[in-house]
Length: 146
Image (cartoon, rainbow, N blue to C red; front, side):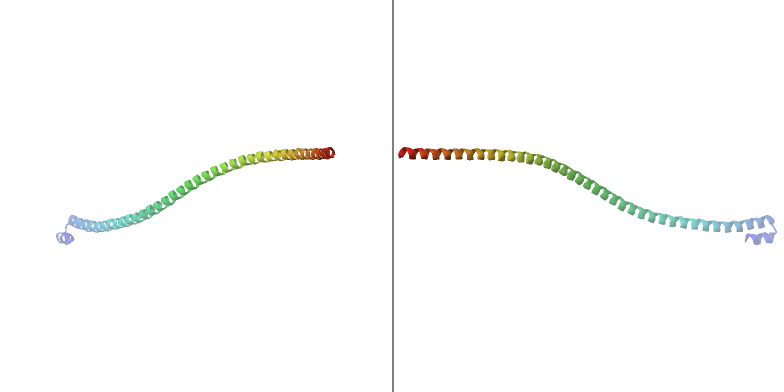
């Protein structure tokens, strides 16, 4: 309508203003469209980022939980290993002590066996002597009684 009035009046200034208004209107439509597209893209990016963040948060929580469970298992197994090593060390000490006791008992048994064998030999000698004495006494009694 402005350009119609500029033509009717023959005003160059009015025609220039009409052209500018027409061009400016087109630019604002384009700018509004670009801004709308940018806002839509930003909203979509924000939604995608929120989805990605949610996925990452869930994955991080799962992995953190798995790591914590694995660390607790490692600590438990380490404690169990330490206890088993302590038990093994005590068993090895007990074995050494018992081996010493067995050696001492074997030595004592050997000494007792040797002593008994000597006593047995002495006892046999004493019995033989007593038997000889008995036989001599019997012979003397026989001689005396005749």
